Length: 264
Image (cartoon, rainbow, N blue to C red):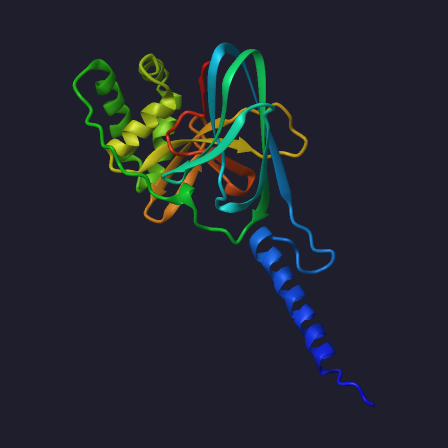
């Protein structure tokens, strides 16, 4: 008697379709290459937190990066023996929080994130235009000096980006005024204030310059400036624009990088 092989063929077809769908899901969700030999670059960045606990409840909060232009978050890991762990997200700002009822002495916490390079990613919270807080400049000596730098920069600029470059150049060339202003607050703080005073959305960001094999790198403060839907990141000292593909934005919501309660 000839057996009916139709259920077998249906099962094979189902398994093939399931395999194809699973492969596409892994490619779409985790950027796993579809073709043999295809390569994708993944950056693994680890941060280490060390502090002394004061024999009381401890709460540690660390700003952590999210998927952003040019990068997709693949995975993140922590190492924190005995600590409770929670990931927090508020207004698109991401933080990891460690808690413990009581601890004393030296403590070490680890956080690692794996980011896969994704040139197709073009929108994220880091490109959301911040609200402008146009602080008015008063008549005090600091405000007067800052206004003088701004007036000179405005004359030589044509748009928000060129205004940023000219402002940075003013701070670099007008040494006496620059040194005087930085007695009150840092250069990058003044740049944000003056740009926002001019109606230009701008903010500080903490970023990591990605380089192979580098260890013990520190996060660097950069200036993020918006012109409509366009956005650029500037070095506040040199005025040079930074390329997003070599720069991982770590914190861009004007929040503290790390907050420790119960430790020092």
